[in-house]
Amino acid sequence: MERTVCEIELEIKNADGLHMRPAMQFVDVANQFDCDITVSNVENDVDGKSIMQMSMLAATCGTKLKVKAEGTDAKQAVDALRELVEEKHFNEPMPNN
Amino acid sequence: MKLADFVCFEAIIPELKADDRDGAIAELVSALTQAGRLGNAVSREIIRAVIQREKEASTGIGKGVAVPHVKHKKVKDVIAAVGRSSAGIDFSSLDKQPVYSVILLISPADDPDKHLQAMENVFKHLQQEKFRKFLRQSQTVEQIEDLIREADENPSL
Image (cartoon, rainbow over the protein chains, first blue to last red):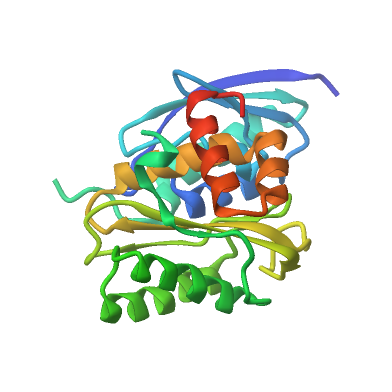
């Protein structure tokens, strides 16, 4: 199988941002895939499969994160993460205004 | 934001009496109450809310640490209490291991960004092995206070 690299930018859309429970959902989805997943904000690159590291991103609503996946299932992984973050916005409310 | 900005030094418990999760949460919230940071009625509500939050998903994220937290409308600023248990407490952690260090965080309900900043700060240090080790080995309030002040000065701790 070919090792692919997929990079996307995801915007946090739920009002409360990437607090612990959304971070756990992210990590749960990320861990369903074999590829390596790195998530970056302006300051840090962290392991998208580690709850301790993901909690450190403190991504507020409106923050854009870079997600880089490397491995045979990289494409599927970024698609699933995009759905979780941007379409389902972690099943949490969006801002009112 | 620094740890010292929201950790209440009067609510540091170097040896938790409780040997279970709910007891540890109650002890830490009570310490904040005794320090004058929470009213009595609010305190009871917050204990219930933190335990409820913990039941929905454990904040015991592994490596011997747990960060029970809740947002509450009657709290104006982020406040935190710190507890240590040498025997270890069952927090239903992700790695199924006991918890030796507990950082309890209460945030205002209407300022999600501030809650995230405080969490960022806590996890920045908790993911450092040295910080976890020093916290677990601290035996007095002074040692924990020193560790927190040192961590604020030194990002790699």
